[in-house]
Image 1: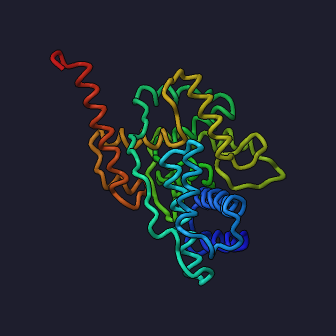
Image 2: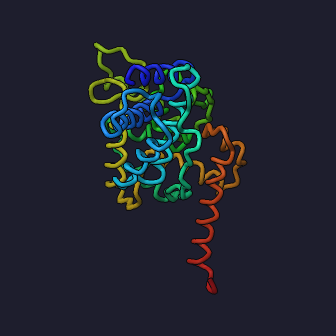
Image 3: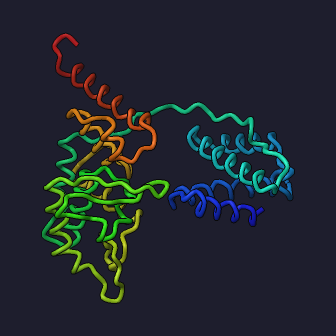
Length: 297
C-alpha cells in the first residue's frame, strides 16, 4: 500500500503540479487512512477496500472530534487516491464513488481594519536588520495579497521595483504579476540595500528575498512566529491566521470600489465565486457600521 501511495504522490507532483503544502496534506491524510485500513480493518490490499470501510474510517475521525472541513479534506484525498488506483488498474473498483462530502459551514474570513493594519505595519523597528525585514514582508503582503507560501518562496529576481510589480508562482504552478504600491516599493528597496546584505550568509549564496538569522530562506513557521509576535506587540486582539493580511487586502480593495475581476486576478483565484466571499465581508462590515452609528438602528 505504501508503494501505491508513493506512486500517487509522485503523480500529483509531476502530472498535476500541485503546491507543496497540498501534497503534504494529501500524504498526511492518506497515511492515516492506510494505517486505519491495515490495523483496524486488517486489510492487506486496497483492492479489498469497500465503501463501508471508508465510511467507518470517517466515523472514526468524527469520533475524535474532527471538523466537517477536516472530514471533507480527507474525503477529497481518499477519492483522488482511489480514482488514481482505478485509472492505473491497480484496483478493480472505486469504493469512494458514492461517499458524500459533509455540508460545510461557510465562515467569513477574519479581516483587520485599516487602522489595525496600520498599527501592525508600524510595529517593526526599521532601524534593525530584522525589523526592516519584518516591515518589508508585511508591507509586501498587504500591498499584493499574496499567500505566505508565495511570499517566502520569492527570489530576488521575482521583485521588479523600478517597474513596480512582483511575479509569483501560485497554486498549480500558475504565474501571476501583481502591482506593488510606492510605500511597499520603498520599504522593500531599503530592506534589500541595507538589511539583506547583513543577513546574507557568505557560505550560502541563496537567491531568496527574505532571509532568516542563519542567512537561509525564511520558513513558513518562522514567518508565523514573527507575525504573531508583531500582532501581540501591536495589541491586536483579533485571532490572526497566515491569510489575515491577504483577506484584509481583498476586503479593503472592494470596500474602496475595486473591480471584483481585478481582485480575483491579483489573488490568483481560479473561480470568481471564491473571490465573492469578500463581498459578503464588506456587506457584514457595512451592517456593523450602520448598527453602531445610525440613531434608529
